[in-house]
Every structure is written in structure tokens, then in C-alpha cells.
Length: 177
Image 1: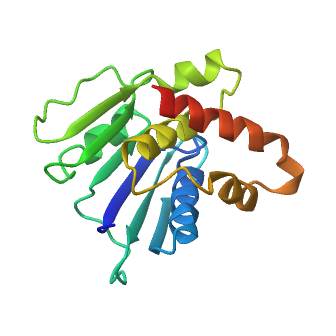
Image 2: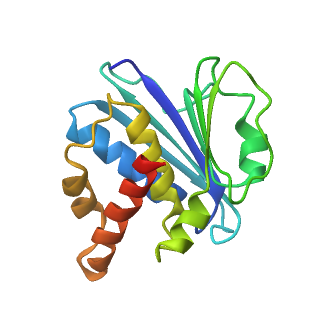
């Protein structure tokens, strides 16, 4: 695997940090070098939140990402903030339920995933983030689906064990889009 730099951005409460933590743990489970850098203010619930995840075979010199290979945008302000930073040839995943704007760049691959709508229709309202992550995993075979359950079991606390099957469901929905 080459080095892959991922920015996940949205409003607080959309699971942005959890999605990033999941990808970081997924990378660790595959013996990759990993960096996870969350960023949020006191307005975490409803304010903006983002995180940077770097996955690499080589040691990572800095957790700061200026040109992501991948952007997961959960809302329009996040798309507008990061769309032009994505490297040419990169990927943009956006929640088309909440973002009705098309990406005008032609040098990136764009995936319009109606994640919020899909989550609501499937009774997993708070898991649009994991639907987008499922699509990312599907499109990037170097991030295999192997070990997903073990990663989820590490991240979902025992008192929220019911969320394990819901997160699995969200990842599968994302893969099927």
C-alpha cells in the first residue's frame, strides 16, 4: 500500500471522529503505520468537526494533511472547504442526501452516496458516516473488509454492544451502493 491521506469532515454529532478512528484502527489491524488527528471545537455537537487519517507502509513524518488523497464530506460546508485540496486523481465521497451540489472538478473521482437517506430508510439514523466508510472500503481493495468485525468490537464499548450489528449493516449498505 502506498501512503493514503484521508480527511473526514462534517458537523459534530455525525460520527466524523468515529469514522476516522475506525479507519485508523483498520489500518493498524493490517500492520500499517497510522496517524489519526481529530479536530473539533467546543461546539462539537452541531459545530464543525474533522479528522485526518494517514495510512502507510512507511513511517509517517507528520499528521498534518494539506493535500488529501481521499475526502469524505458529510455536509456542504465541509465539501466547500476541502474540495479543492484533494489531490488530482483522488477520491471524494459525499453524502448526497445533505449535499445537493455537484463537484465540478474533473481530475478526481466523485462518489455521490445518499448516506443519510439510506441510514434513515434502514433504521440506522446515526450511521451515515459508516455507510460512506463502507463505500470507501469497497473502492479501495488495499483496505480489505477482513477484520472489520474485530475493529468494531474494539471501538464500540460494551454498554453499546447493540451498535455492533448496526455498524456492520451500515458498512454493508455502503459497499452495495
